[in-house]
Image 1 (tube, rainbow, N blue to C red):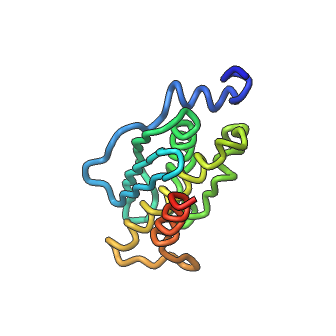
Image 2: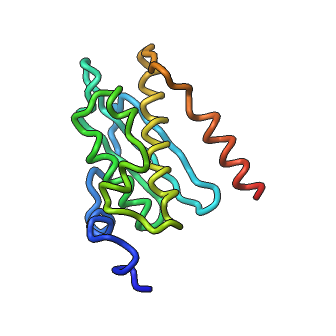
Image 3: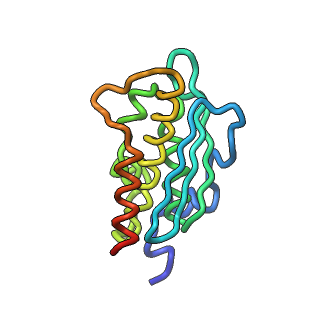
Length: 151
């Protein structure tokens, strides 16, 4: 099967022309998450203003086209959102915005969601902010990575 048949035009566009690639030196929050099974890794930098609105975000992703496209789309989806709104972003929403991913690549959108949550938690911890109804995701992510390595 050719790449064009596997991926939507949006996935291909966000892979070939990723938005918001780079770093933010004075980031308000930074999150890094990797997937032990496939080796993909994403780092997300957030710039958040006093009103808790994401005014800028940049990412660096080491991984396949679906991982880069998911990272790019997620950054587009959270710009201008509040911390509370961004925390609600799910991998399913990222996949829908990309017009879908093949089943074997759905974990790439989960990487974007988990990295966003890690960056938001980093911001919250640095600023003494509580995120209602949420637990810190890092331990869950680390536990999942260990399980994947053991499988």
